[in-house]
Image (cartoon, rainbow, N blue to C red; front, side, top):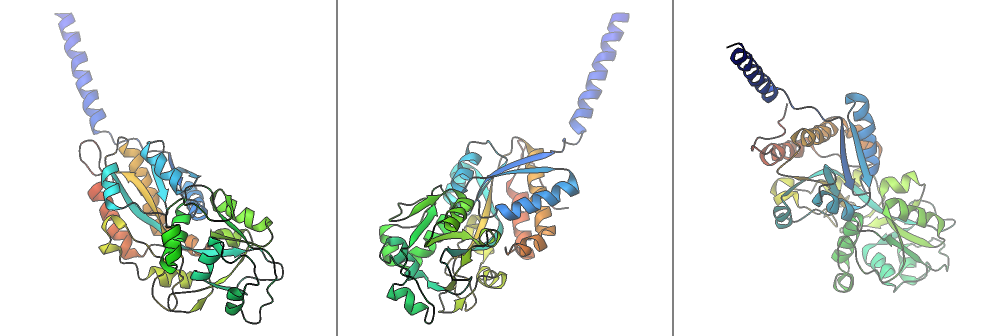
Length: 354
């Protein structure tokens, strides 16, 4: 009889413990990991530092290029991937992924020419395409000279610099060139990695910035923050409306203002060569990739908490680095997509708006 009572006691204790475990809140993640695009790395690093100080949650981000970010999220080695090339809706569906834009910004043409200061030289899309196609090989070429009356251009050879890794920055750049140069579109096209007709390759925005900085006569495409941080000389650009513009938060915002995210299926939207007198022509968004069905819901919630905090508290940091934060109206659409699409094994949303 005593043995039976003891068994009944332990059985009851186990049931109570089981119920307590089932009702206990999921353990909060203290570290989240991501990998991918180098384009947004400066702002992600800033956000991560501020978020860690506020919440004690670390965000470990590997700046390895968009191609690497897509591969790592597909192999589930990180909690989120990052890409400047948005995946098309059918690609997302096939992989079981959801994407959302985190930040917007602009790419600039950085050059290394002694005696030329930032904004003293002007280039347009067709000329940049001709340079990268290998048709224009000297800085004093008549085509460049026509765009720059009064600027003393040297007879220096042009050395083109490009991304050697799979890169969303390359996708944005080549997408732009494909829109402004039929020859580029036909011969090279747009992708995260292409067969470059000329030039030397550097890994990441960091690599292109470094190569451009130490190669005389060079030209390379980099995210604006990298040009500023590395004190690179960058050019003005002629946009779709024939306006000659300096890169700035105002011109990036003007291009981003045309973005209709509500009508973009799967947030698939490109911002290159946008209309508008003040629109910077090589503008793009950077996207976050996550799985719809989450094996680690607490970690997924921690990732979404980080980006929700960044949307709500990181605008000033983004603007200081000359990125364009996502508008509040768009943030609400993004957060609704999280609640509707990112779920745990039982089908319950892993995140809800506070």
